[in-house]
Image (cartoon, rainbow, N blue to C red):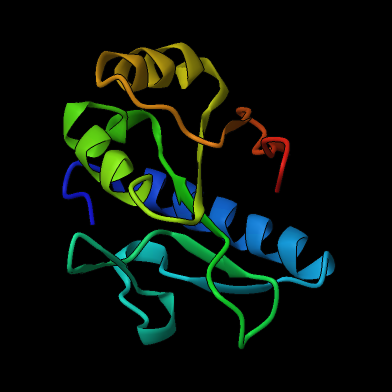
Length: 137
């Protein structure tokens, strides 16, 4: 949970999580969320022996393995500290997707490339909170 995120951006963050969850559930996927820094038992995945809690954990059904992890960022959480988290989420068998404000896409890409790893996809949302999910989700 980012202590740097403003209260207003927490609201945006959690709203984007809710909208993505609804979209994925319409596709028939099973989704567990960890909004606002929550740590839901079914929303945990293990990376390097540590339980981590991405914003959205996606499975084809409740009883199947995790296939996708999605992290939502706001303008105040796109920095080198968050890249550590992205890199950890990306270090498993499931695909990792990142969703950021549209105007932050270049910075997110710069940070990822600077660490020399790649992710399954990058999505964004605009100032009206219209979401463009990456291909593959």
